[in-house]
Image (cartoon, rainbow over all chains, first blue to last red; front, side):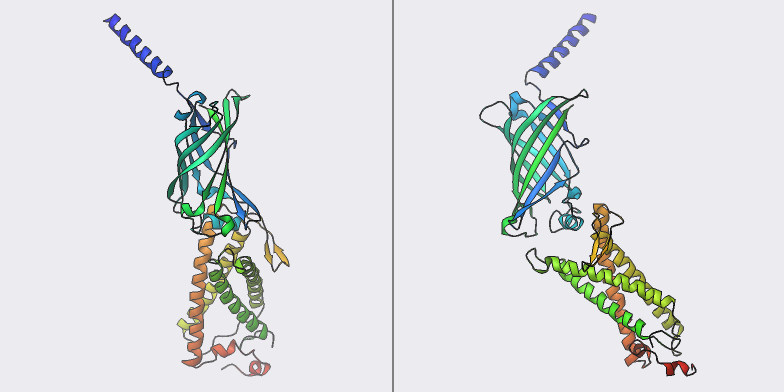
Length: 198
Length: 191
């Protein structure tokens, strides 16, 4: 009886081990929005003469990252659209309205990755994330170009990794009604993401 | 006469009343028009500039009006007014003052929510005293809109009542708001 128990325990332990080692489990990171080491910035051409920049102050998310098995990595982010901030109260009010983000009806925007496409050199530092962006109630596939900035231990017993990403979306694609003119149809998104290993 | 008396309104009260009336209607029209302007309209910035400036002007005029009202004699109600008429007129008047005050305050709070001041024709700046949260700004915006509709409704009632007094009941109610009270009217004994 006793020996049977022992074998069973060994079997489970082995099973767990092999599960852990075979498809090298990617590390999970929490985006450091608490310490504000991450930002979602946007810019739109103003009349075609300059850039208007703004940001979403409130968001959260997690990602998994494994440089050796990049395609198994993933990310999901939730943005509180009410937190849009372009440093101008009346414009922000307009951005929250039905002319733009429809914050009352769609208080969150989300991004969920579907596929990671590594860059050719294969060191895992550069890749594209293809995923679904849900904004203003519309879900559309977008591609974010990502580059790793750095990673390593932090001075406070944690492990951190940071990326920057860029993409652009057409406002019309996400049913944003306001027309800002021919030079201002696109919104460029500039993403800075630092994760703390779980 | 400039001042009000027991028999009627003086010139200043009459001017304040009609300028305020024009401002209220003008502000409503600009506000209604400006929220749907396209980005490339020449009025996209000009209309809000006028709206904010005239709104602040209405605020100052309303303050002046209440002050002037406080230091003047109240014209006596006309003798033909029933209790209900007096009560209704007074209620409408106070409600209009209250709604205008709330309207101006919400407008000011929206404009100054990020710490910028509100500008009266680029001439006098009203500094920000309270930075509302995004949700607060949106709520203030909604209240501002419904107050505006409420005031227009109430002012229409007020105007219809004045016209009814003039053309149906045929008393001096409307005339009192058009013709400043004279010395001779004051010297006459009150009926």
